[in-house]
Image 1 (spheres, rainbow, N blue to C red):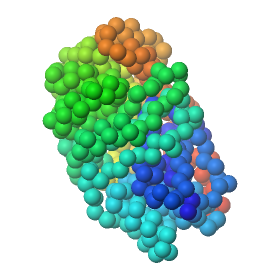
Image 2 (cartoon, one colour; image 1 turned 180 degrees about the vertical axis):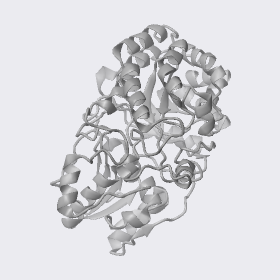
Image 3 (tube, rainbow, N blue to C red; image 1 turned 30 degrees about the vertical axis):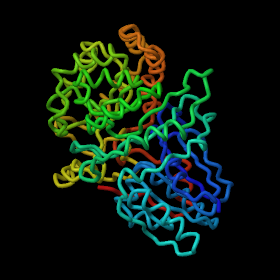
Image 4 (cartoon, rainbow, N blue to C red; image 1 turned 90 degrees about the vertical axis):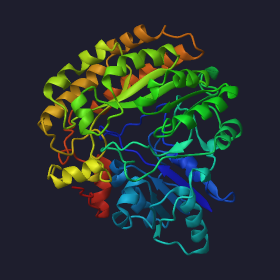
Length: 471
């Protein structure tokens, strides 16, 4: 039996662009680890390389985000016409299973550990069901990834990833996890064993990336007690790693120092905004801006690069705040912003339901528009065109070469911890990537106003497919 596992991708510009980066979707490696040993498994990541459309597999798993849905259902339809069986999974498939069932032979709406093996077994018996929603088996059921299937030649800066936990204990109103996924974590011995015995390292750059990996968790610090225990177990491994966690965790100085001792050299946190009114509108009370400067200095001086994401278009945002945002960042002497987006009301979130009840979702919004770079609603204090104007200006400003130079100059010498300076230098390209979404001058960045990718439009027309309206 031949199985393909595909993480699909469409670029924010809606042009045909690949975007190799340090962190990539590891869902293909996860699902591959749940397939039977006798199966011949291939994995593909469209963010790194084109998918070979002339190949044939018996069973094809698709993992995709909301904004990749139209592209994914095109691929599925093409494969099904050639006799292949296709499966949809991910948050979109879980939230819109009836729509997905129109374009895939089976839809997984639950976690993969309890559903992928059952689906493959049914497929081999010729008894495939249209939907698989077996309940979660818990975090302890997470299986080791198939790291040996990763092709680092397609993405020379990629690091292998691993899960220690899933979910998040907070309830930010724009987050897809809120109300949909509780926080839980794996047994630490399982995590350590996977790193020691299963993980495969990036061989590029003459060994500079040996023994370096990332935690793929949404919030590795969801339980500070668990994070402490995990760090203690990581110390003897002498590995270098990065993670994402919420800003409140970084206020614990002893925990930050322990993370650094355990090999942490990179932390991403979704600060989201420096505007208290915007944070309040998002129900993101764990971020207290009065503490930001002290925390930033403490984290860097401990030997950890702190990077954060910002979003514009929240109900608390004003023209004055967004115009002055670069000044606020300059006051913090901090320039490692590696994500800048437009607040997105994903359909499974409280924010979406709030906007829907207030009739503030924009007409003509399709699943493609829910990408984090397209305005899908009417903000309370800004016109849509103002949000786009601020977004484009900030992308170009924060992702500029002078900004990166200031970042290097202010942070490179703040710590002598091993691999700290190397991590700072590697962060430059990540900061530059903020400009990638604005490379298409024809893009409008407002839902209903931007066409789909040319290839997808051509295929959808030929196949008689229509975009999914989500309002």
